[in-house]
Amino acid sequence: MAGMNAQVLHGGSYSGKYEGKYAVNGQIPGVRWPGYDGFYRAISNDWNRTPSVEDARGCLDAVARLNAVFRKNAKVDCAILKNTYCNDGLGSEFHHYPDDGKLLNCGYSYEFLSDAMLELPICKVTNGKLDEAGPAYKCLIIDGETYLSTAFLERIYILAADGLPIIWIGERPAGSRYHSESNAEEKQTAWKRALDRVWNAPGVTHLESREEVPKMLQHLGVLPEVMLDGTKDVMTAVHEDETARYVALYAYNRVEYAPDEPNPDEFGVSSIFRKGTMKSTYQRPGKQSRKTIRVKLHDEEDGEIRLCNPWSGKMEVISGSAMMVENADIAEDKGTAQQYRELTVEIEEDELILLAIEKKEKNRTDNYNTEVTEKCEADQDCGCDVKGIGMRETVGEIIFETLDLEEFGPNEDVECSFLRSGFRKYGETLAIDLPDQLKPWRKIDAALRTFSGRGTYRGTIRLEKKEPGKRYILNLGNVCDTFRVQINGIETDFPDQVMKEADVTEFIQAGENTLEVIVTSNLYNKLFEEPIAWNGMYLPYTPKDYGIWETKEKPICLYMESAGLY
Image (tube, rainbow, N blue to C red; front, side, top):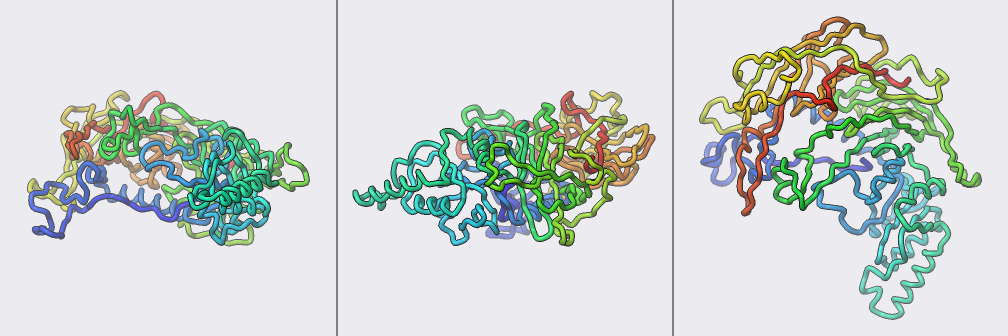
């Protein structure tokens, strides 16, 4: 969220082709469909690949658009000293700083810096910010460090003297990190002298616990780029270039792993390393988590705001009112009053809202490669103090009537290449007469336990009235794996594969509309149907659910929401 150098797709061979040592006609002798796998089956993505070229392209387009934003210059509120690794990258991911999300939920973004990084030439304080042209950190947090070097203590003293607020949590360090700084009495004396000087320096604030940090930062006038009300788990990120400032709001989930209690639904890497929850099997929480929150965006230029959709590549012009924010606890002479845009936002778990704020006197950025829709009528001149995004109500009626299945497999029985594979009609058209018949494929018929391919659902959407200026969102409840939507024979923009939603505003009409949803599974059930042994361990197999189904918490419905801000 805060910053990214690159994003890399990792996995084994997706083509099934091999022309290395011992190859015979582009294959390793004896290999079975879908062909050569660059990793052992247990770790490879061979069973996790999609057979849909269209869906793969849609997902990668979304990744590319997000890359275009998150590789821009990041503006980060807090730098946190960290000289050790956080974790191994497997398991829970909702935060890396163990404050239970206190900083995040107040809107503060953070990154970790080592003491070596603070010695870089760019780490200078200007206007109270560290590396103002880069991340522009507004403070440095030192949390429970037992050992710190003499050079680091001297560096912190200089940063504090130059105007960077330092938050120091916990007791005094016990000694230097390096033996070379403590192997003589005079060196120990020099270390203690450096510690005493910085420990008592102006600009260094001492706290007993992490829970005190957000309130103290506000008291010191260190306000985040995005202010949140602390009522929901939300991460923020701000990136910018010469023309626009991008603000991301991500409602994170609290999925955690329990190494001593492995999840029975786990497989592959997760099972090998005994991480109880991995994103490879993660399903969006069943509970309802949509909530209205208040958001204030720091914006001195009061530029035009656009709501960005990374799945479709489109932006919608919206607007928001400006306000001045100054914490009541902040002394007037600190000059901390800042201009913010205040919004009311509806957001739910795992949802990403991405905004682009235009910088005045600059041309609109073309890096997002977007179409721009018309601005809503209720703009910033309407006199409203607070604007809102995403307020919804349920309308219309959705009826699924039939399901056609197509199995994905090799074009010929002897074929072992993924490249020479395709879809074939599977069975007869299934009638969906009742809502409870809308369930995962493997629960429709035991013969579909190892089925992999795609299913085409056909039905209708009945909408009594289509209101102008409203957005219509088709929510498919639980749908797995990837999917595309057609309304009245026209394919919509690529749907949101995380939220399981498709914007159908441009395609739906008042009255009865034809609906077609194409759901494509990956190959997991087909290729990983039995437990396999790896390094003396057995990796479990649990069939995955594919298709469309709903629960009380995740109904299939049509939402109507206000377009833009209102």
